[in-house]
Length: 116
Ligand SMILES: [Zn+2]
Image (cartoon, rainbow, N blue to C red):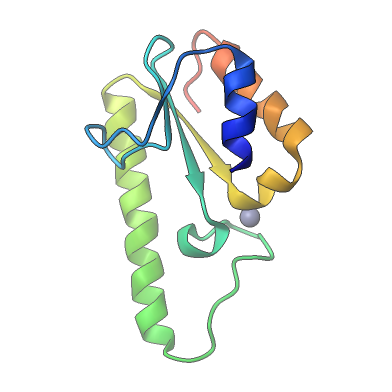
């Protein structure tokens, strides 16, 4: 996983898949009070992303499934923010550009009052 090769180099202590937090964030930086979700574009419906295609068959089934995922993501983010965690969502398609992603993660983690 690309993120796992980038994150250790940033120099912050982190934990993976913390189930005690809402949404089980993929990466948690306790000392920064920040979390990162890495979402698949298809399942989590990355807006305007080419990978976010909709299956042509069983439309209703898929729409329900997607809607539930998006809703769950949204409430996890809301809950985390309420608990004073800053949240960053990284999309799977961004993993193809590690330099850009490194920059985004660095900005997010170094910002003392981030609330994205
Ligand atoms: Zn995407």
